[in-house]
Length: 101
Image 1 (cartoon, rainbow, N blue to C red):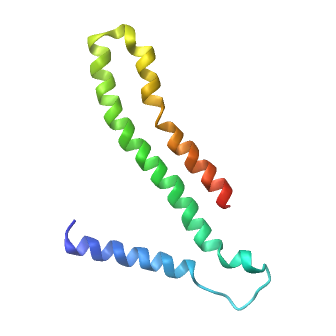
Image 2 (image 1 turned 30 degrees about the vertical axis):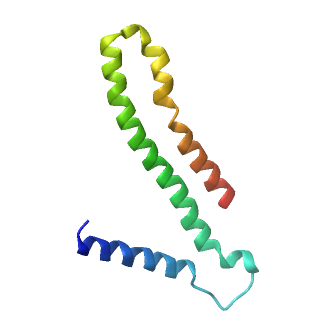
Image 3 (image 1 turned 180 degrees about the vertical axis):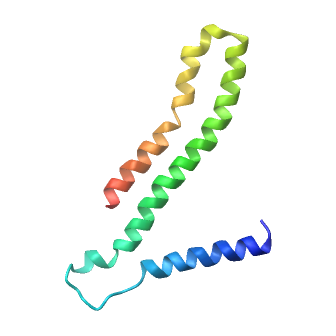
């Protein structure tokens, strides 16, 4: 990453953090409403990063799976299990999303 990209990413992170820490004058909902923005950011990060990690893992596993099945087609069913294991990351992201909201 070059210097300009780092500056843009850092400013976006700080802008999102500032909106999460923004306070209002009314305290209708109590202290739980004060952290609603941070919970939303955390839930989005949990699901988004889980899906990104799953995509990276399945890209590498999928290419090697195709090569292995090309050599021996009888192992396709058992090798498919290895392709589906990273999907648990997205399931954990959904779980964190529902827990935080």
